[in-house]
Image (tube, rainbow, N blue to C red; front, side, top):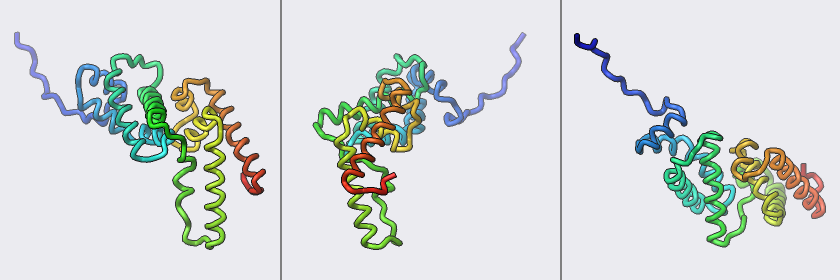
Length: 199
């Protein structure tokens, strides 16, 4: 007896597949599946790297290195955390290694929004804002690295505290304390420099 005919296989959009399914496919050598994972998480990986590095070009290099490393280590991904968290952890470490190799220190310290000047502001207010922004950058640069890293990742607005904890390999409570302490220290230092309205 012949088997019943089956319907032709439908092409399933790879964008409808979960990260876990894509990881499984990628482990079997499916480059397109890994490419989809890259596309899904490219922005988050870049922003994690940018939080650690001083330039967009350096962040792009570190992000690329992170994806290469993730591809090589994919067989070792155990699924204890989400793929995104695992990938962001790799990205953070690649960015830190990049920074160390280049012997650069932090220069990027504030959201991109601080760099955008409003046309409605007076020249005097624009000058005051620029002076405060410079003071803020200087104070964040002088924070101990542990406080600075946690603060910059939190201020980027891209990562939940749980993701930051995984990236820095520290407990969630420690992340929250470091961010809070970094903000407190920066506020106190800015007030000591005469910036009384710092929130």
